[in-house]
Image (cartoon, rainbow, N blue to C red; front, side, top):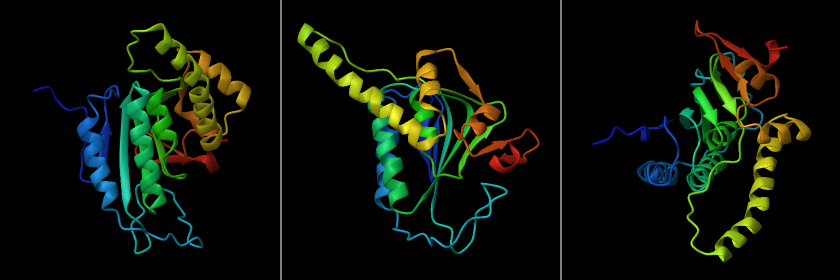
Length: 214
């Protein structure tokens, strides 16, 4: 049996391969079950985590944490949309969604990483993001199917732009250029400057955040 590279164990999700519809089915089922059983947590708006370590947030006011570890080149937009929906549901119920990019976060994997809870999006120092449209798991048999998809793609591209503009500080003109350059990998220090991540984990285990990145 092939080793599972995209899977969930307890509250930890591991995305360690391309995200295809067929190899994320069990993961999506497990994650759905986890989110369905999340207790609603009303976060105290006056309570701010004074973080120096995004992994050390224990305490009576700390809500449930859902951890994503990411080293993926991306994949099908259908798999991405299912996972993104579950991330949104978890956050809406008061959970912290912590994303850690341990290697590459490309395409759909990048979009998932930036949708973690603000303040809890981590990258290893050697990790990288690559911004791209994602891929489609469709086979066309008729010209009309191609035509119909061509009408949908502009809306989907606009939605991707909106996600990056909402979750990061990438200027719109720069974002368009990055989308067109499939070989443009963004280093962790540059990701921190553009608010693609909140923390860089250094090789010695210490963290660099926005306040000391400039």
